[in-house]
Length: 132
View (cartoon, rainbow, N blue to C red):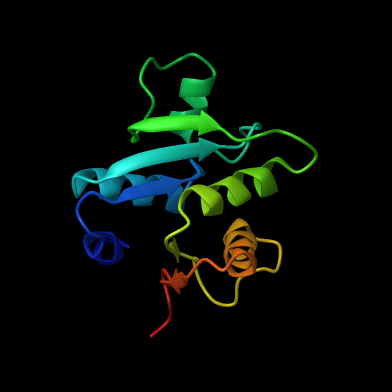
């Protein structure tokens, strides 16, 4: 993941979803690379990383590993709303980091990739923990 982040142009804004795992890791790498991070959170917090959970519950004063942030619209499908907004905001390129192949059909990564493809946004997939 670090290598993919390092390949981004200076001045790039990286949009992440605040979820435990890949979102938080990508945000940390991007901050270390001097890039701007914008986090889009779902309206429910069950899959957020612990730092974001503390922040949205008022136990932390500063938003973690981000420059700016917002909540996505709510609704019946809060993760779909968040993932759609991620694609719309970062519409130049989606760099997705699935944990392994094959992805579950209902995973957030798969959903976001499918949204990007439907929207005509270029997708670059970098598999994490791939077997060699």
